[in-house]
Length: 257
Image 1 (cartoon, rainbow, N blue to C red):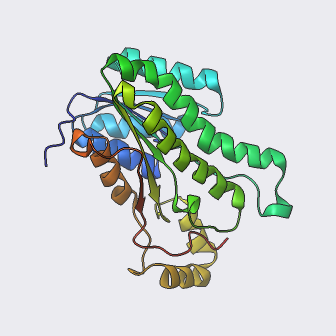
Image 2 (cartoon, rainbow, N blue to C red; image 1 turned 180 degrees about the horizontal axis):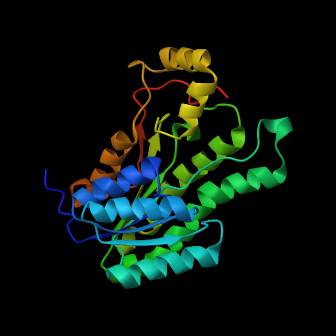
């Protein structure tokens, strides 16, 4: 299927590894020019080198998405270097603190900064460029934790807020021809990720979790999420707006810790 994405410009936050890097590669294969960011300079430099080696036109800038000025600078720099913005993929996420009695107000706020407010800031900063280009597409990477309760409630609450944000912005930005959707992955395994650490440190618990919660008895892969995102940002998905698309293999509980 020709997705007609060649020479479009996409921003991908948190693109130095895992799901974000897989999304960047998938968009690159469709001929998209990429603005990528991550907090860690070393990982971002390696990701940019890898993407350029694959033939991509890449703008890369270290950015702490918890800081509005840093987000604004990244978005402006990418738009100027690449000639506008057509696509935004808000991929940064994470969680601070433990369960209710083991987490502070500051850790709850940090979790919302990493998830919800990062998506708000990046989309707001990119909107003038999306409008100038006649519209575009925004995807927020959320989680099945936004709909399926699990321990460490702050993460699920932040992801539920992102799901709501996608629906609300889909209505608000329709007049600007900007579609907004959420993609909600289940547990995704990639080298160096949290699920690899969990498997390595608690192999029996990991095996029990996989067998008990996944009909296919395996976790998802970054590429399986990236494939859905790449379709959603294309005009082939032009009538999908305000949706939350699960990519979870019919997973049951989203977490056990």
